[in-house]
Figure (cartoon, helix red, strand yellow):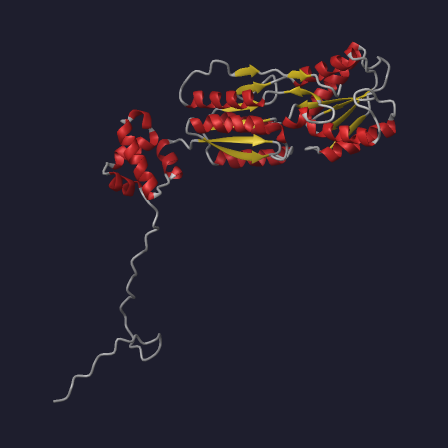
Length: 366
């Protein structure tokens, strides 16, 4: 009796002794993404998906023990909420966009830190965009931001085109313009008068006996407004003689650097060696001016008064400590966050227009 031959289990390679077949190829089961879902959290917690969703969205309305159990399950499973799906369902992204001229300058950091802290405490996240002191880049950034449907927008020291203002109003979301003082804000405004700050510095230098001021500034529109006000007030208070030409100005490309400050002072002294005061549009520029003055043997403040703007952390540590204009960035950031959140959560914003003012910090450099 002959043995039955064993059937080979080797699959013939494609085209090798393969019998033609009209049958469609077997469909492979689709592999799952492996992403942990809300259902996985509910199963681990022993709760319903509805309860898990409530803990994620309104934990204050859920018993503390339930919240703890579900948060433990979230930690155990590594679950990350799908924000896109959540925003589609709720109509809220919980994102607040912030547009700043530059991330390379410390002048905005205090406000950004306060803004981020206060937003995150209320369950919102901050999305940053940089305009680079460029109107076209700013318009493109706003277009991209609005396409992502943020819940609100904070604009720090931006110069809006009329088209951008129309777009922002049409978006029907809370908008805060910060770090400025303008007559017709899009929505809410938290800032200070650059003109008043410039005039304050002029009066201070006149009181200290200076009569040959000069200016080192970045080509930032708001710095320009401060300095025009400085010149106008300087003529009124006797800092600049009525018939004298405008003070020499060294204009730097924003954001200006310490090296720019050094080059600026060198340029000013080449034009007018008798300059006895230098007003700078930022503390970083002022630090460069101090370094260049020291290198040239100019004593500050005996030969040359130096005034900055911003009161950055290093302003007290320069040699000598820097006289400067302080802006309370923390107050601006915290107030901007409060205005956005109050509006989003249906509360009345008690003061949508706030002037935070400024302080002249008188130190040894002037």
